[in-house]
Structure formats: C-alpha cells, structure tokens
Image 1: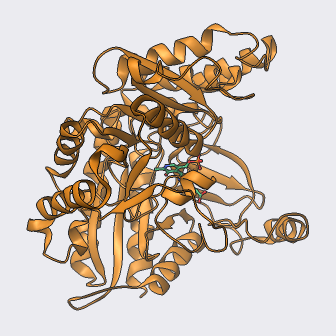
Image 2 (image 1 turned 180 degrees about the vertical axis):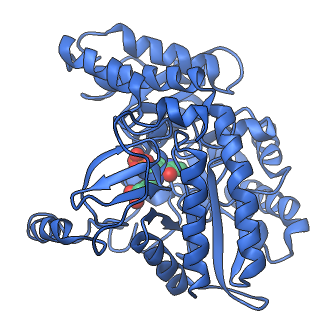
Length: 453
Ligand code: PLZ
C-alpha cells in the first residue's frame, strides 16, 4: 500500500474487497422497496446498495459488503470520502454556525476559498470567484456573467457535452434520453458544434483537431455571426459524454478562435477539476487559459459547493445584487473546501492522479489487446475509460455488453460507472486516496468481468 493511501485511507475502515451476499443484498433490497414507494421512478442508482460507511478506496453497504470504489460519487470524493482535514474543518464549523446567508452576513471562509481558487486557477490576469452550490449552477452563472459582460447572447457548446439538468444547462447538454426527453421547450440561443472525438471522427483521428476547429469557425462566422456569440463552453475532457479527450491542438485552437472574435471561453471543469486529471485543472494539460472556469464536485470534498472563477472585469461587470443565492457558499462547505486544498497539498494528490494513470492505463491497454470489443482506451490521470464496441473492426457501440460487464464488476465487488452518448463507455474515477493494492485488485476484477464475455 502506498504511503499516501495509508495516511489518508480512511482510518478504521478496512481497505478490502468483500462480497458476502448477492448484490444488492437482503438489507439493501428491503431499503430499495421503501425507496420505490417513497421516491420518484426517475431517480435511479448505478449500484443500488445502501452505503453505511466509505473512505480510502472502499464503500461499505448495509449488508456488510465492501466495494472497491472506482466512482468517487462521480468524481466528487477525489481526496477520499470523509478525508481527515475535510471532516475536521467541517465539524468545527458545524459547532460555530451553520448558515448566515452570505448575502446577509459574510464570513471569512468564503473569502478564503475564493482567494485560493483565484491563486490556483489557470485564468489570466486579476481574478474573482463566485461560490454556488452545484455544477449546473456554476455553469449557468458563468453563462450569465459572459452575457452581461459581452452584451451578446449566443452560447456555443459541443456534441457529447454534459453541463447539467437545469433548464439552461439541460439545453446545453447534448444527449436527449434521459436528460432532455419530455422536458422542453429548451432555452434559446444555445448552438452546437461538432466535438473533436478522435475515435469517431469521420475523417480519421489525424484530421480530427483541424476539421473540428474548422467546423467551429464555420458555425461562428457564417451561421451565427461571431458578434452575436457571448461564449464557447467546453469540458477539457468530456465527462458524461464518454471521457472524450480532444486531440492535441484542438483546445488551443478553440481558445485562439474565441480570442480573435471577442468570444469568451468558458471551461466546464466540474468533473475534470481539482486534481482529478493529473493537474489541478485539466486546462493545464494544453496550457489553455479560459476567461471563466466552472468547478464543483471535488471542490467541496463531498459537501455541495461550486464556483465560477474568472477575469475580474468579467465578474465585476454584473451589478450589485445580480449574483447570489440563499445557500451559495455555505460555511460548512467552504471549510470542507479549505480542507480539500490542505489534503491535496499535504499528500501531493496532483502527482497521485498521475501515478494512478500510470498504473491503470497500461492495464486497460492490455485488456484491449485481449478483447477486440474494447475499441478505445482513453482519459487523463484518475479519469480513465474504455469504449465497448462490437469489435472485429466494427466500431458500432455495444451498450448491452457494457451494462453486462459493469454488472459483473458490481457482483464481484467493484463499483464501476458507465457513460457516453451511446451508453457504451466504462469509466473509472477512483478516489486519489485509494491504495495501489486496491487499485490493482479492482483492475483484476475488471479483467475477469471482460473475460467472461
Ligand atoms: N458539468 C462537466 O460532469 C455533473 C451528473 C450526474 P451538478 N455530472 C454528473 C447526473 O446524472 O445528474 C456535471 C458535469 C459537468 C456540469 C455538471 C453538473 O453538475 O453538480 O450535477 O449540477
């Protein structure tokens, strides 16, 4: 076990994989029956076992099963579940006060989180940060700020994008079922450009970056009129859309295209941000410097917190009273976020994400070598994935096989998540607090689940 994992691997919680019942087990089944009669059908769970404890690299359920965690609550518990400094700081805050509403009375931790993000975010020049509660709220506020600052209304997003479930962010999200079906009419002035998706680019991956950049120019200059466009919003590695890593050069080209037209670049780092991809922010891999950057998920260490960090003159363009929210920047969540940054620094977790990539990626490539239905292997840091296809040169997505593989992983004590516009991506988001031993054991379980096909 690495020193890092021993130090932050959840004291008291045994770091083992243990499956002692069917999955879900009897106690979870009983709770599921209560869930079905009390909660809406539209709210599902990837692995419906009821959690009673979590930390390091494991989740323990109500039947005493212990799962290796390759999901981190969708990239949230990046520093580990109940990480020590997060718990200490949040607990101490619970004792002091739980809420004032920053719009009524300010408190120091809010300011300190903003100062920290301003210092660390790869946004150029003087910066400001606004705190919110969720990823969708962060993206939506970034768009509001971009519109107010530019006086323009158009927003450009990409194929396979995921930006949230509120009316505006749902409209910005690409995939219809399950996110949009029946929920229209959608927000106006949201336009979509092709995403540079190397594995599926019609002209082949060598031409992908250039042709996708050309398509963006075509959309901006001829179809919309660049002077009508406030911002281009992009995830530097697409998350729900299938962990799509754009080819080298595409993101810098997007940044250049925007800058030449007075269009703001908004990076949605809700899933990629806060040490997930081997850098603190995924924009850093290609040195792009967005005007506005949205974060959430990993920022609060499991407590709900989101942020918009951006160039000072943009955030300051919104008049007093134009931004806010009752719960935004809750003091307990702010203390948790300060704990997250302490954990990252104390355990060098940015480097740890790179280490995880160096363990997982070669193992995934080896699996792809053994199974032709593993069509693509991709990702950065501790955000990695395989794309499941029919195989034998046929890249047709195979969502049924993907679900079956994921189900076998669950049965054998490994929490995996699926993703992708075609539902055929198995994605891996281990907490950075996981030990090397558990990481490797999880990969063995995955290898076994693939071999059963
Ligand atoms: N932007 C890039 O990944 C959230 C969605 C889970 P919220 N992704 C997980 C689900 O199915 O609801 C996400 C994201 C990116 C924005 C969001 C939205 O973040 O905190 O869920 O609002």
